[in-house]
Amino acid sequence: MDTVIVTGYAKAPQGTSMYELYKHAGVVLEINYRTHTIERTDFTFITSLTKDFFERILIGYSLEKGLEPLIKLIKSHYFAPSQQAIIVALQSAVQRYWDHINHLNMEHD
Image 1 (cartoon, one colour):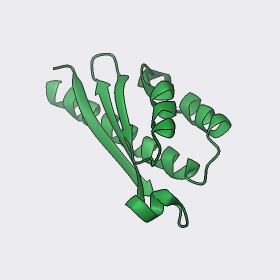
Image 2: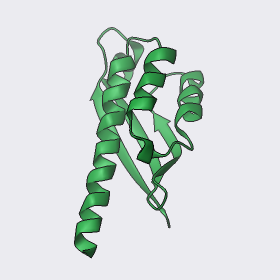
Image 3: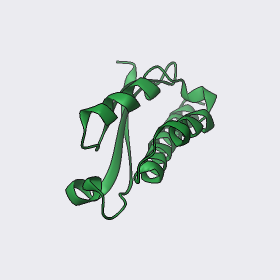
């Protein structure tokens, strides 16, 4: 198996349906650790349209490009109260991924 699952969470904005249902914005990424490419995603969004939108943005994205292009894309195409929470959750998941990869690389050195 060439993939790992990583998660990231951030507090959802109060007054949103995401907050009422989940309290947090959650991101789950399945990442190919050989290519550092996102293969599948899941989110704590309420609507399938929003989930589909983020799948199209993230699936196939190489994390070797860094997060800044993704963050710019989200900021310019996703106008919702949960925008910043999603960005923080995504950053958390990707940081967790790189921490794990770096840990594995140190074990093999």
